[in-house]
Length: 267
Image 1 (cartoon, helix red, strand yellow):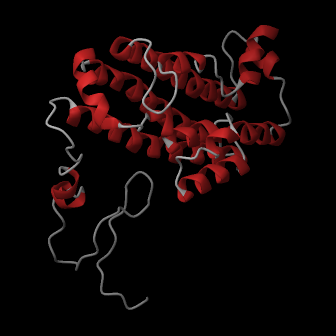
Image 2 (cartoon, rainbow, N blue to C red):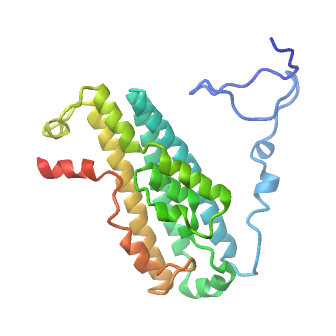
Image 3 (cartoon, rainbow, N blue to C red):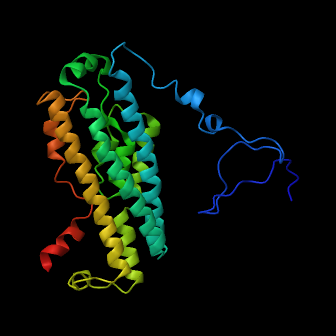
């Protein structure tokens, strides 16, 4: 015992981990829904810079993206740890959860599509040079997934903390490194031969397919996003100095796991 007067921690029934929340006396009433979510603070966001009707929707959509990016990063890290530890159930659970979130990300594009070209033309001057291309968490997802482009870590518009995060991602193992470690632990099975089965039954192959799901779902989000941008601003340049839809289209062929895609060609 450490002599603390705090009450017993409430445990998550699924994970066995303590639930986050303010410490309280055993008989004291717990925090309310609004207090746990800090709704007084949350609902003050986003700040209003104009009186335009679509401003709040635009900022809320991007804030929600960043919150989901945070969870996706946590799940991809957990998947990587599971593969390094030869814990396939852990890796699969994390990758499948990331996939469900990525479907939400793709679906959320429909919200932004409700902004008309004329409305965005009015909003755009208030964005200055801010752009989704500057999202550090988006780049972290790419780096963790194997698309490590050092140029993004050297952008002049990054803060010192953001640059440090990206350099850390550049230095750490990517998901495919962890997958290769899992394969070695399982005796380096021939993935091409495993794929030849009409109904494959292999834990290693299940992880490979879950990695491809992550790759495919992220590509789906990219494709839906570029179409939305084209509908709103056409071929105009982006706010962050990019070429807009032209730049976004150039990213559509990016793949996190080219070696896993190539397996299909060998069959």
